[in-house]
Image 1: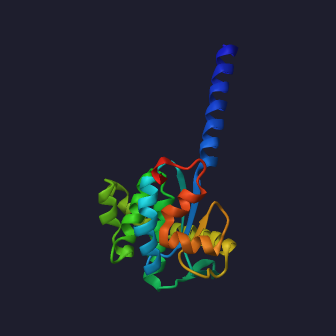
Image 2: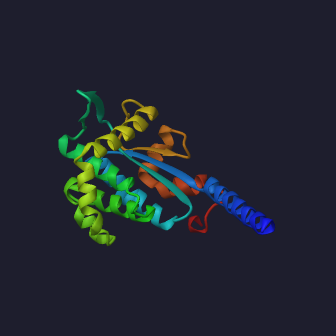
Length: 209
């Protein structure tokens, strides 16, 4: 029995080490964006989406829906002012709730966000995008989340993460590669994210050839 436990422990340890090495080699892409921002929509749908799909398993993407919003506690409740108005606040909350939904796989979350950002009104298109990933069962829960204290708390937490990077953001979307902000790299990523990923990836993926 002790031998079996030791073997299981060693197998688990090998898995954890292998997974960490895989994660270390991934190119990290963090996107600080707004749900109704035209530049955010353009970047996510034309640059991030194809890179995320083509480099699946080679990039690690972090989405932070908040942008140039502000948040403060008023009478014990969160109050938000969003760059493009109240509809954007709700749209940001919808995406915050999607990103934190434990019943959705990471790939489903990304496909939903990409779909939402490809809509004319991302704040009103949740069901359309849930249908695309066959997750309409999550609709009611996500809408309740976005309209409740839970959505407020999630958006405020994304606000804290955004403020930790820069307050206020100089540009939306703010794109950070490998956890280090560089204005020149951000500008390049906005125009050709694939080229940036290919340049910093080690080893260089075959898709870059």
